[in-house]
Structures are given as C-alpha cells and as structure tokens.
Length: 339
Ligand SMILES: O=C(O)CCC(=O)C(=O)O
Ligand SMILES: [Fe+2]
Image (cartoon, rainbow, N blue to C red):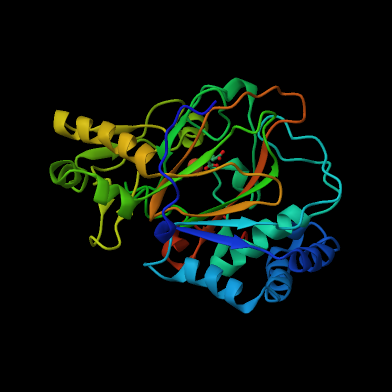
C-alpha cells in the first residue's frame, strides 16, 4: 500500500529502545493507579519520574542522552510500553476523549516526556492541552495537519507562531507520539528524516540555498484558522537548514513554506524528495512511542483510510521543551506550562 521506497533504518539517527516484559508490567501496574495527571501536573511529573527511574539504567541513560546531547539520534523508537486495560472509542473531532477510565497511556507519554524535558501546551494548539489526541477528523481529511488521513502529510516540524517573526524559537524541542490504536489496515506510517542525513544526501548548491534566508514559513493551520481569520501569517525570511555541519537544525512549516525566488522553490521541492529517500519509517502499534527531536529532523505521515467509526487510528502527543525559560515572554499568568 505504501508508495514510498524508503531507505532501511540508519542506526546513527534512530535509537531503538525495547522494554523487557517485566519492566513493562511493573510500569503498567504503577501507572494504572495514577489518576488524571493533568489535574495536578507538577505532582504527576514527580510521580512519573519515580516510576520511570526504575527503567534499566542503560535504557534510562539512552533516553536521557537522546534528550540532552546534540550528537545523539533525532528519533527514538520505544517498544513494549504498557497500555490501558480498557480503551474507549477513538475520540472524534480531534479529542479530547472523555471516556478514559485509566491513564496508563498518559503516564507513558508524560513519563517519557519528563525524561527528555518538560511537557508544555500552546494556547493555539489543541486548546493548550498537555496531552493531544492525534486522530483523523472528517473535515480535515485532506489537510496538511494532524487531522489528515487521505493525503500524505509532508515532511515538516511542529512550529509555533511567535510575534518575533521567528516560528522556530517557541516551538517544542521534542514531540512524543504514543500509539493507542493503529489504523484499520495498519498502513499508517510515521517518517523521520534527520537533518544530518538530509544534508549528506543533498548536492552542495541545493544545501547552500536551503541554508540561506530565502524562505518564509506560514503559521500553523490552527493559528491561521482560529486567530488570523484564515489569512496566512508569514514568518520573517529564514533559512530551512541552519547551524554547524555536524549538528544542523532544520525547519519546515506544515502549513506551507513560501520560497522567495525560483532557486529557493526548487531547493524546497528537492528537500521533500531527499527526506523521502533518507527517512526512517515506523508503523506505530499500541504500546509503541516515538520520541521525535523537532529540531534535528522533519517528520511526516503516510496516507491511510479513516472510517470515523470510533476505531480509527489514535495517537497521543505531547510537546516538550528542555526549558521554558526562553519562552517565558509567552507564559500565561497563573497557568504554568501554557504558552
Ligand atoms: O500522525 C503522525 O504519525 C504524525 C502526525 C504529526 O505530524 C504530528 O502529530 O505532529
Ligand atoms: Fe507534526
């Protein structure tokens, strides 16, 4: 079903983390008795830290290294995490689910998030929630958003509109995607293209163009729709790839990148092509989690068929910052973690 012919995983940019059954069961038993974590999130994060501290030391280190070092992989694939004993229907309309009786999935999502940074919410994304439901939504099936299903969601990173004119500054350092339910056919793939692999695969002239400030990012679809009345809000001209050759940062808006000239337009097309060539491909299943570095690489999603029958694909997502200090100008008074 999948039309993409993608390279086999290159281990330097993908970290594979398999939890032993005994660890899964121990985590699952402890997470099953934690109530809705969002009600007292700082307490819950402390509790999750205690629980996840029981991971095998090397696994714990691998996840911490993923969060703290520039030279570690851009994507981490965690398998065999515990799941909720009973899973209600996939929420409609982008969530949230009101029927979840246990919070094991939330614990896995936020517990892993806490090992690499701090989960944060953005007022213009999923109402500022800390736990996002990524589910297909009928009205959004063909959009370049997390609601889509019938179109390929192009390689992008999750950016945040900011009054500074730079949308990469306030954006999450990481996103964590945890699978609660796969799509009906099991064909939905998530892709990750690391900027190091992208840079190696590009010809020098294209790379130089992508490294020059000849692109304007459109603000996220939710911002354009809910705040800007449907009118595009473009960033200042920025490069798409920046930083030292050994640790490049890449940024591409899902809601459209506006190239400033013809060379920039071709470079942008080439970037999407190269991403497909170098990307890691993951078919997320329940109990599997992707830790995605939102600066080291771009992610994408294949098409899949949604039925809107309460059994569609369901991911939970968290946005994670290493620190909230640099985005304190956006803080909502009295509501910590909301920007
Ligand atoms: O559905 C996926 O696999 C990825 C969706 C996505 O890009 C996101 O949630 O930010
Ligand atoms: Fe995304």
